Image (cartoon, rainbow, N blue to C red; front, side, top):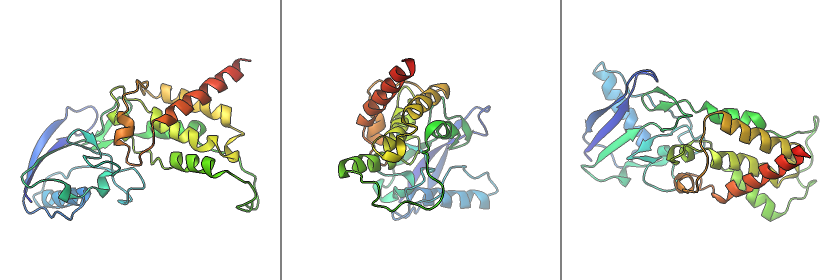
Length: 249
């Protein structure tokens, strides 16, 4: 395959960025997208040029580090797929591909395709934990949980915190991410001690870190590689409202 890559290059957040063009011949269709970038970087290093900086870690669709906007879509054109699990056979021979970092006010650019997404970590730090007894772990069947509640918790816990929801939202909202991290504890007995505190603290942290508000565009749900449903946002809003009312009593 022959591909023309238009890649965003930027030294740091204070420098002005630009798109640079790289023509790649003989791209193997069985490569992953990141392997294709690896090969590009190897050639750039051989030529004595600066390689393209991009985030990656597990390359198994688990960690959420491989956050790139490909042709304007976070993680690329294939639904429910992270960038590292996207393969070059999904593109056509001769195609032009635009590769950019996630764009959001809360995600300042570090270098090239790398962004600082630590604002999501600060939301987790505000309330993404549970109280546990020290000592021996309880038996797995000692706390009965209904299948319905377990399914909801597992669906929410599938969020890998990649930030695609933020990058796709016209308002740069992190409400799908925050909702997933709140809802995963709502239906579990382990999440009850901090339930009110969690909702108040995590929503406040979301607002303090520069994320926008949800306006029901549903772009977040469309690009989420783990298909977290947008209905969790309404559950989060309900949790926050109940906690706020109790806090005022």
